[in-house]
Length: 134
Figure 1: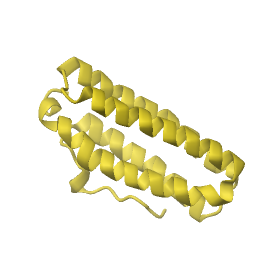
Figure 2: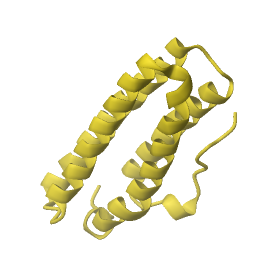
Figure 3: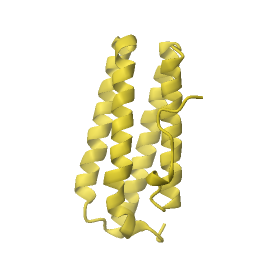
Figure 4: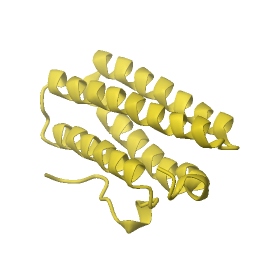
């Protein structure tokens, strides 16, 4: 399996629960990438996009629960990032349903850039608050 996004120590937050969720998220994204590279049927790609949506909701809900539990001061800004991501993913999924051939690259680029930014920048903001507590 080819990987668009390779996990390494740079992405580790040191919060096992969230690091494991991020790894799973990246695994789904890499399966999506492989479906794209292997030119699999649109139905297969759509099922992986749906899985990405479902896992995104699970992961974000998990993070947001920790924000409330431990009083993350940047919670509102982080929730906006989560909501913006979910809206964009939904939009790209809808566009993919209409035009699978042209949209997959756009979707993959969006996912790769967003996940890198999410883990390396946004999520680093809560590490000191949550590390050692969950």
